[in-house]
Length: 260
Image (cartoon, rainbow, N blue to C red; front, side, top):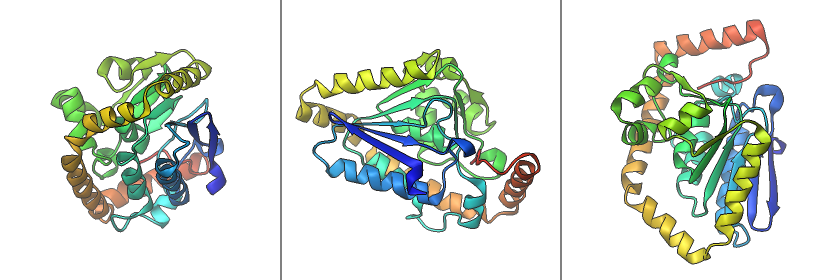
């Protein structure tokens, strides 16, 4: 599964691409582990100054691979998905997301931790946690109400509504929307080049100042969310919803992930 995360390092920019198009870039435990390992390594590599995360031209990620998720659900706070959250939230290098197409579940909550988020107009951002008997993750219960206000956050987190690329920009979840994937990916690279031209230590310290004030609260929220997420997986509500989703996916096609 490690070959499903492509990496390209060029002139100080590390581009990580989720590359599982036949499954809509659904994430397995092995893929979470690989992404986390690459981000931890990037933080230690002086040659890496900016990280771009993308899913390629058609889909960012449809969320968890449902079969893998149900076979090996998270059972502790160092489970692969939670370890990725730690890698992202502690990353000392600027992180740019280029989101083309669907970004479901963790595909959207991850964006809350990126320094720049670029999307295609046909992007679909959705967090169907409550629909599946689960709870928000990746600090979304803390960050979304602060960013959007309680009412808008409730539409996304409680009702599970989705946003397209233009709406994501209008609501403040993304910086800019583009007509196609090529434009989106090129814009991500252009921002990376601009960041590379800045004084390295000044950039690092400024970014740290922006993030450090809320870091303790964020980490406490992550622990609470993740602990509750593990508990929710063992409830009848979640088991019923997840099995129903798996059965629907199996009836139509081999499961492609999609959530949560």
